[in-house]
Image (tube, rainbow, N blue to C red; front, side, top):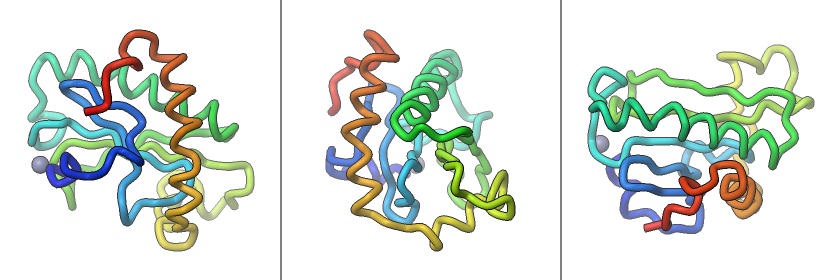
Length: 144
Ligand SMILES: [Zn+2]
């Protein structure tokens, strides 16, 4: 997760001093984004007060933007904190075409079954635009 600080801006929906939202290699299913703390903080219990206070709005705005851009009937907000302890949540649009045995926790099986980096990248500008509008000033934080 720390290594993503060096990633290109092409997959970035937004960044502010505390949070970054972007597509992540290995999780490049269309409509999937990672919201992560920019500093190395482990699990939700490792976040400081400023991060805890801003996490809610940032998570809300990203979920809203992904939902609007994809038209998905459900958008999940997932946090495990086991394989990658650096605090992050996975936001996954769950399209109407996703069968019952791939919903809820089983949606992670789509990580390989529906990996499509090009299609995932094509969605970024639209999610970015939706986020800009929905998040107001926060969405205008410079990508850097
Ligand atoms: Zn880290």
